[in-house]
Amino acid sequence: MPLYVAADIGTTTLKAGLLDDAGNLLREHAVPHPPNTKYGWDGIDPVELFSSLKALIRKVVGTDGQSVEAIAVSSFGETVIPVDENGPLHFGISWYESCSRPQFERAIQRSSARRIREVTKLDVSWMYSSCKMMKFKEDFPDLYRRTKAFLDVSSFAAFMLTGNIHFDLSLSCRTQLLDLMSGQWSAEMADLWEVDMAKLPPLLMPAAPRGTLKDTIASELGLRGSTIVTAAGHDHIAMAFGSGVSRYEQGMISVGTSAAFYSPMPPESFNAEEFLSRDTMSGGCYSYPGEMYALTGIHAGGFCVDWFIHKILSADYGILESFGRGGPGFVRTDALFLPNLRGHKAKMPPGGFTEVTEKDTGLTLLQAIMEALAFECKFTFGDIFKLKQMEGGMKEVVMTGGGARNEPFVRILANTLGSTIQVHHLPHSAGLLGGAMAGAIASGRFKDFGAAREMLGHGTDYHPDDPALTEYLDKKYERHIAAFRSQ
Image 1 (cartoon, rainbow, N blue to C red):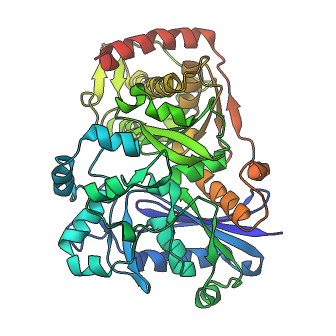
Image 2: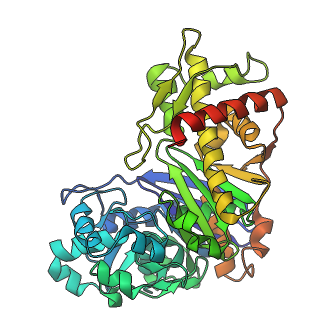
Image 3: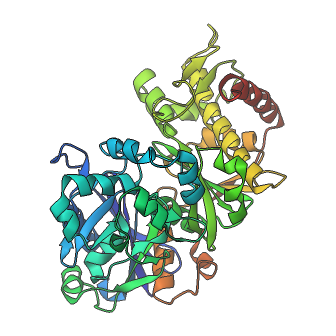
């Protein structure tokens, strides 16, 4: 049976898995790779990164190397690594690092946030790759001149494995250099951000073959030289692939430390004034099955639940059993919570509680936090559906990440949205499954992601199941909107 290695390069952790073409996760391992502060900012040491990635691949492959058909790599966005023909030239600046803010402030004076958004469909920011390229050019001019290409992190891994230079299309959407509607690099944006177009390599869609392993790398990893390498793209895109979210009436929510919301979008939505004037939502391409998507999120997400359980209640996640059907269940509390504890860009006030009374307990406030996360999901998906000009709301939401294991929250979310919530059968590994699907397509096992759907297992469905709870949540949602979103 053909096997596929899927690797996901996260902000502080590398994860890899070995999967078969029925979507079974046979082996999975993870290793930390903390940021390096050698240059005074949080950065990615590409040499260490690739060394760790190779060791991780060897570990998940074990003795099954001769059965591996493909390797697929996904990664976080915004970070880019400068390379020449022989390999990396310098560290990449971590996606969240604000050291490139001065370059952003200077460039934005030559254009406008509105114009940049019209072209790129992004919430204009110093966070994106364009500003990091500017900083590298100014701080290391000699290395910049030697740079053949800037590569996203997944494409850097593919380059090191194969020797071939490309940039992943789904990650190019996070550079502030792409004309989203054409799917091509924008000369206008490159000029604005002072980046040489020649250093922006050819674009390839996720699952497009990047080549086969170098002979030395194949020998080192215990794999065949004919093993195909591909990129599974942006980590959220890989999760969407692995979740089968493909229709306009579907959405995906990934709840970990933060929360991300994803839904396929018709392209014309991105030219609507409603989208262009709402800078908290980004557009991207290409989503499965090949069009575009909307992506947004909140910076706190599951962090709020974790913070309250561990820091405030001095408890563990076993406390969630108190909301089970065998326990006291959900209560009615007037307390409202704004999940904005870590939001550095949000226009809302800082997170916290309001309307707390002497009747409230640790459990009622924990419930208020989970309600608030559900309310923000409803608000966000409602915004997305307005842009789609679709009536009827979400038909199905697939949920991934650690938050998918919080059953009380999933039940609250289903009753808040009035939609079925499907908890992914591999909530922490949906991105690896998406990577395996990309690998299976790149190696010719499946024609496209539609055909690769047979690799998807079905998760656990949670339906709106409590009319009284739904009524309570509907009324409280209106109070949440009035308190936090009415301005």
